Picture 1 (spheres, rainbow, N blue to C red):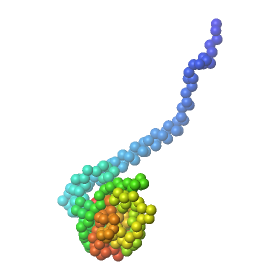
Picture 2: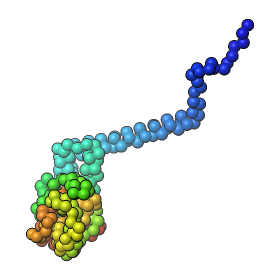
Picture 3: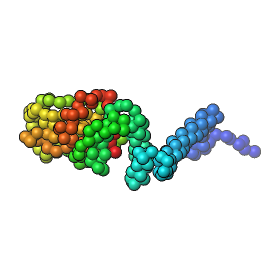
Picture 4: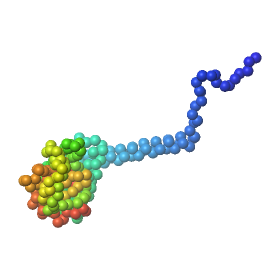
Length: 241
């Protein structure tokens, strides 16, 4: 009677398997997955609740809130874009009740307003720079998309002399010179800086290569920016819709 051998035959496939993960690791992975799912559902439910609240028109709601509902209802937005719009507009409504100076820009009506609470202190027509992707001759790119939401001013500048920015040459389809031209107020006498390279600026001088509004930014008449200039600080909020 032959003896049964447990050794695998030469050349046969190795039937060994990886050791099973411990129970505590399986439970930890399940807990992490459940928490991730729960957080995502909470975010989605919160957004849906805000959307339902905003889109439900009510005769007893303030005119500003009803207007915001109507505006958002007509927009074709993804949930992420809608969330950003909601946050900016809710901050705007809170500022309406405050005693703070702030700037409001209505992109649809092309209006600039400098406000204190609900009171409009200064209003002006604006020009909006087109959304563009600029590519320089050496391959450097700048992408400017429509700016929406609530922001804080990051700085301001007036009566300056500086080299013309690289993006201006790309906008004009020109190669960047070895020595960029230095000009006084080449983007306009007044510049209010916003995050990510966007600005509110007055019109450039006639001899500037940067004519019109900067792409994705906002050009306001010089007299109007001059009037509000002393009140604009890095504490000033800007709401763009």
